[in-house]
Image (cartoon, rainbow, N blue to C red; front, top):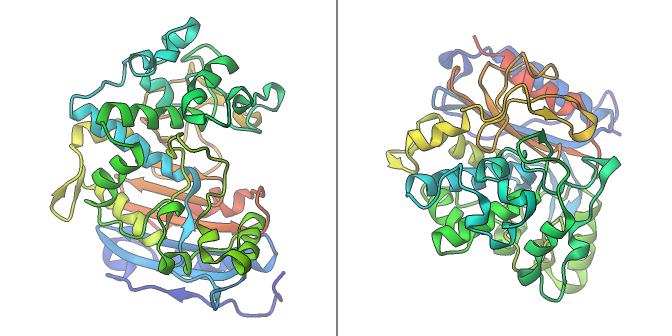
Length: 403
């Protein structure tokens, strides 16, 4: 825990405009900085950082706090520190699926069994691509999401042949609910979307995402750990116990140990449920592309009609979110929640803002109404911590500056 009287340095990246020039109240950024500093002093988070683009201009790029340990001569979280965006990476997977729809390779209402023959059985026959995108397929939930109905799908898989058995294992695990009935958060459904991307495009899903999204959006720093350069590894956020263990292994086996994924993966299963490394600033390349109807710096990434499915409600009041102890309706587009005050009482954003949280440590959002996109991270001191002030509270403060 930090000394309450000790100053916590704010490290700033280059900005392109003053907040007032874009219709944003700069005093709210000062308030946000103090809020993050308080969380650090209280020992709730190691670090906090954020980048904010309004009307096409970066108006804030700030970082404060420390890494979990000294690493490659670094102890402070910098604006260009790379951190794991966790499930925010699902946004890339969703956009890749939408890109394939405009290429005529698939449709959102297609039964998954068209691409995955293992699904041609029982109620799995009724699961569509839309169900996978919106977490309404009923497929095996992430651990901890439904503690009353935990299912370890990988126990049905032959770990000597994961590529050949994982899909069968998912089917053998069964469904928590009828397709389209409930919102149940599932990373497995995004593995399956990755498999569909691979089969529909003819190249591995990760390569498709790099070619169709990262490169045209000039996201050279955004990568999966397995693709990291030594320069990128040296800029990693050492965030938690898992990363600290990697650092310990580095002393014996070299810096490449930091390239290991921080959640279980198996060779042959697409890494399309998250896990990429990026910076707050570079994630706003994605946000800017989304706000510009699929264009980035004059380059077409995806058509606006396909992209509009991010903001199109694909769930309604009849679909209830029963994850993490909730029991409430949820508004969800093609891969992202859509903020509506009538559905979400935990934060205050502009109506229609799309966003995605990554394991409680990062949040990406795009607000068309205010022409604003933001990315922030709050590195919790323990791997499975979560604090509403550091997630929903920061998102609310960011939005409070819109004039």
